[in-house]
Image: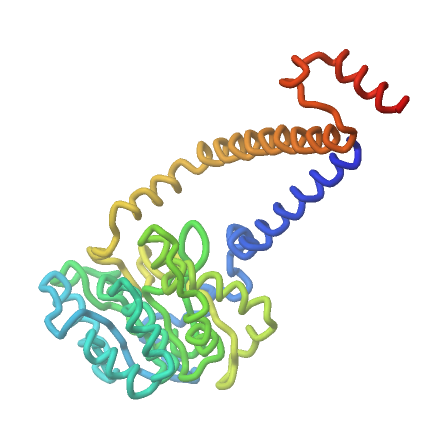
Length: 346
């Protein structure tokens, strides 16, 4: 019996080790703050200061956005136009479904098969932003992210701070809550090693996870990008702030939005989220309950596994010694003992 216990424990440890290894990066993301690469508020020059012009501009002055077609919904027209007006010296590129696919066909035909097979349009909207940042460089901004308005203006949303201070970094992402980074606003110089790593990893992460929200998040969305960001930091390539630097800087929540000095605010959007997304958000709000239930389920599964294991071992021992099962002997231990003694004398 001792040997069977050891085997049972070893099998369970191997299963647990495999599961932990499979989700190790996700687990470590829970404690990753990105503070080592954070763009501190003190680093960012104040508005209209000459310090901005004295800093090297590594990220091209290009703003990328995506939509189904060129007819942007009315609720986004004014904030988008304000951002464009604030950045008159920036090139503006709106990537539609048609122009995005044409770009992939012309510049990255090796990815076309994966691109066309994505089941959700939002996945193609996700990946095109990575490819255009690799190819052109610049700043990608979701249509429902607009430049912040620290001072009153006529419109409810609009631009009040230029992106120039952020262009002095080789690449940046922004921190999101409760963990990881998001892909709704990001920027890089052309051919930055992190975004090259991202587009090279897309095909290997392409799989169906059952729930549409989880599938999108972990194949092309923020969770996918967060896992690659964590892996990239561990690779030793996240170094160098100069022209050929591979470092990815992190825009903190305060500098991202909701503060007078922030660069962005969020507008009404996220229309692709469905019932499964609300279920995921509910899980996030009730994580303590779900964690407790998880431990209970694991405990029950362990007990059932142990019961089945002892049954299998016991049956094996009975077969080895030629003992009849209890239902054959009426469940009598005395009959089993007598049967065993008779076999020994034989």
